[in-house]
Image: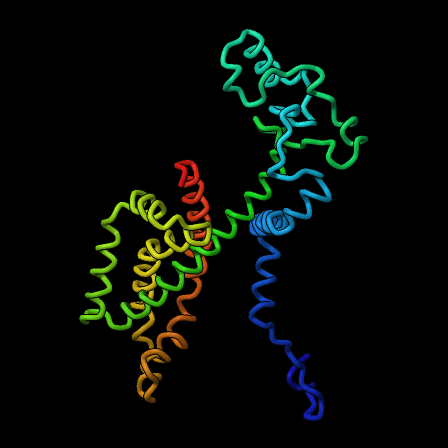
Length: 290
């Protein structure tokens, strides 16, 4: 349409403005790898949350119930023709390392077959086999995921709270005595061997999963604090920060209302890595008997 043909009484064309979350959703939908990762994470979270119901009503097993007659059974879907199971059979039949093998001696009766276990109904299939006490491995795995997820969220929450607050204060009051004190605390805590400290504290206080997560969190915030402090240097001298100070905003209002939202992206990314690191740390401490 040319400018000469536009009439004054013609209604203006309205342009729909896209919301922030709408733009985020559109970009996420185009990233197939991110969708796959988000779907996998959502599946793990759902399995962990619904573990008691799945174990009782779907799999038909209790994670703590033992059955020595079903000990060291391979997955139900396995067949004797698979090379890995043939190797286990040969190793145990020659009486070499049988007591250390994952499933022990595999015979035709232990490999009943997938169709037979499905016909048996609930409690008939060990989809990932059984351990040395006859407990279903899949049921114990999804129940263990609840503890790992809980510890990861607790650690991320504690370390994020301490790290963000300390980083904001340190960055806002950079080159002052407040910044020097926080840096001294970070250097002191960073020089302590975390693994040995956690082992000693866990022996003294005998904490549960939440207590262990709290201990990991209060000694794991230093990296996030330094990261937030560095990000604040790039935003604290911008015009809107200077304007907020000029109208008399308090330091806490400037830090949490104007600075924090502009460094939140790096905090979210760091929190995700903190959850993964906390789960790995919890697994290592569990291996050590903490």
